[in-house]
Image 1: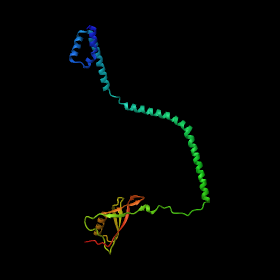
Image 2 (image 1 turned 90 degrees about the vertical axis):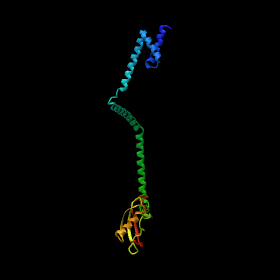
Image 3 (image 1 turned 135 degrees about the vertical axis):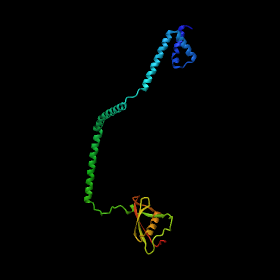
Image 4 (image 1 turned 135 degrees about the horizontal axis):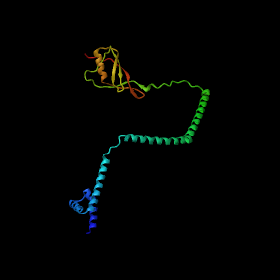
Length: 234
């Protein structure tokens, strides 16, 4: 094996040696050769210095922070790009309007005006010569609004729920919310003592109503209830 061939073989392993990819025996053999070969030693140190410089450059680039005004620069660039796009679209829209959309809308408006004028003339002619019809009420049907309606009563916890008597019937106005529950009441006629009010409140508390509706939508309503022929037990 000649010296030049040995140096070439050693130099081809420099990268692996610098990266630490060689075994301990191979690295020892390379360093023994570098101790006795000045040319190979200079070549090895040059590659080692270059590798160290590249490593420092990569570290500096990785640790370098972005400028503080980088977000502002990006927004300014985007705004300039947007303005440039708008400025290029405006002439195109002007050309499109003058060549197609503008004349089309003008013809459309003229045709609409002619149609309105024609319909107005026909309506005037019919109004002058047609026989007048009798006036009719155009009010909405009463069926569109409904009043609250008692559905059922829940069993009371205490008492038998009897109110009033045959000689003194009680008429009560119950105010029903959209959920079908009574939120207030008023005794219109009949006894108004504390025992009667307590019995009425218990009865209304356990009563479920079909709420009032206007065009199918539940709303607040008023239900009139009459209690008679039932005695309050003492």
